[in-house]
Length: 226
Image (cartoon, rainbow, N blue to C red; front, top):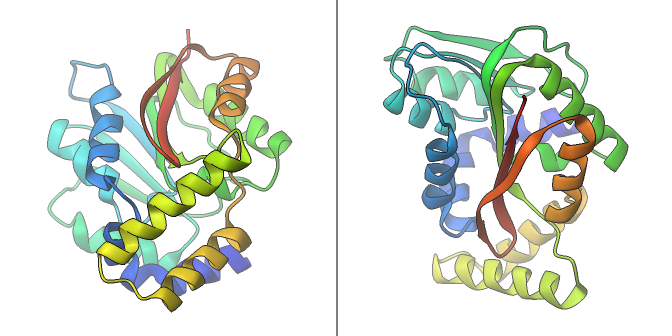
């Protein structure tokens, strides 16, 4: 297992609690992603890349109860928690694997992701990921990502960190835990600027590229395959 996979296996049990303690406006961010899916039909085929404990998939199935969702994650423990959370749904396929190396061969109406793609280690690798996503979509299909982004300036990056630190402090997170969380982000996260993401999507062939939502160091953005 990769170091990142082991990290998330270890973090899985407390993942949901930590998300709400560490990420401002998390529900608002996820709701923005779900609302961006533009389809009226219900029998959608959707891929959740880096599904974690199943938070996005749950929201998708609340809106599209007849959708078929593939949940892909590199952490076995995350997938087990997702199965528990989504036990009331029978139209879900669970796949254990690293989305950066696994072949995505199905044709999907939508591919979505949250708090996962920023772990991809380089701009070139992110571009390749976007190309794989593009190839796996039906014509007219959409990709949306809710994720950590890097600020365009040092000042704004420090501002983003300050906002997140204050949010955690207000939620009762200790100064030591805030420092540890900041260290883990520096070790495990490789975010890029929002502008860079949009440029990479265009290079991968996407159209209708747009930013749906943004709050300091997090954003929801996506595009359409025409």
